[in-house]
Length: 206
Image 1 (cartoon, rainbow, N blue to C red):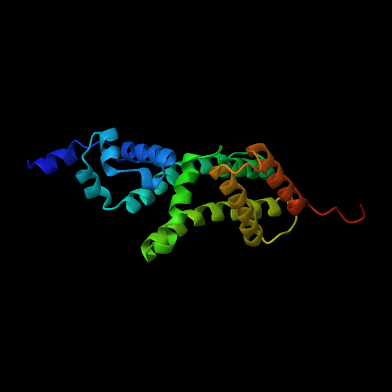
Image 2 (cartoon, rainbow, N blue to C red):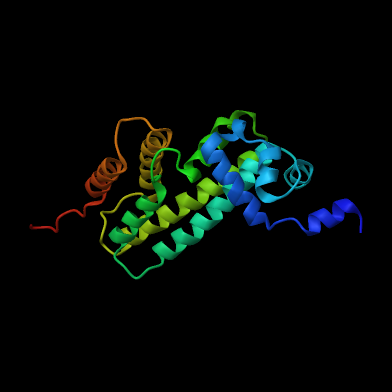
């Protein structure tokens, strides 16, 4: 067996590499991550890492896709619970908002967005697929709430677009550490927006 093939066979699982990359990007940013340092962390050479990922930007995007797959599984479990739609919507928001400054998942997103202007069509499509999954789940949740009478009759797609714009704006502030609102304050603002926008209209005659 050739040396390169032997090294690839003995390489750590892909998830281990991506988890290590996520931690290092959260701590140092993508510019502070080197393939050599990541290789030392996971016991691989920088050459073998480049064999798998080609570029740091590809490593970043694959790390985000891996992180999003984990979040997607958690989101699916939360949204499929037998609970009022309003409770599941609150769980969606809680999962969306970062835990605090330099939240690893949100740091990945910030790095991806920072490089989006130079991204090619394939990379943009992959980013859009991730964004689309969050959007579709929220639209479905809102539509269910309307059909069950828990929410007023709104255009679920339009309301989801505005809600996610609000969540993104607040989440970026929190992730980069701007001293404007803490996480609890952000959740309060979003809760108020949702309640004002979705509160069912009173029954006729009331």
